[in-house]
Amino acid sequence: MSSEDTFDLVAAGLRSDGADLLSAVEVLAAKLEQALPGRTRVERRGGGLLGRGEKRVRQVLVELGAASAGVRYQLAVEHDRVEGFRERQVGGIAIKREPLGAGEWIAALTEELRAEAERSSEARAALDRLLL
Image 1 (cartoon, helix red, strand yellow):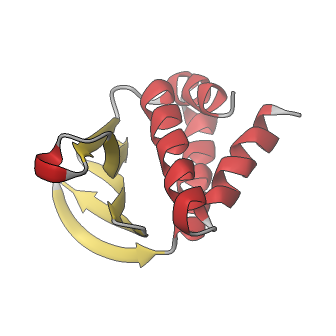
Image 2: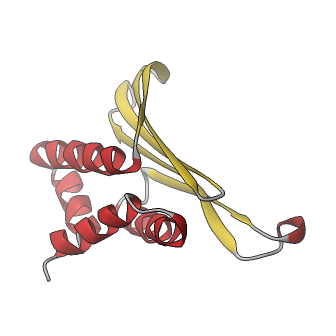
Image 3: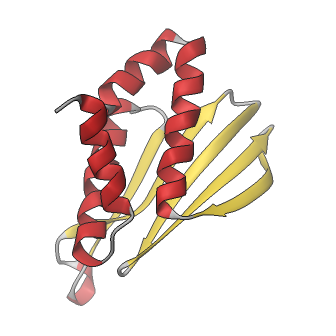
């Protein structure tokens, strides 16, 4: 199985629901943290009484592009629901925010990474790590 096939399986998991969806988000968050350490922020919170239970992903933020003009991808997890957003930024100010389904989110993020990989060896290496 190729690395792209493995990544596609994670992406397919984002299109499912329930426990499969939450597991796919956990795997994806870990892959993004490893592949894009300076550009990915993952927020985790504990569950259960007083938040002392197992920590689960609540939000994934991936920032791509230059600081002056970039794109921010946000995946928010609330209970068993996942919402994705893509936000275009100029000078650190959001100029456009669009909701994306989980499958659309992963496809858009992957496309953005591929485009950036054509321009940057750092992005190419990050994409290779993501597809491992």
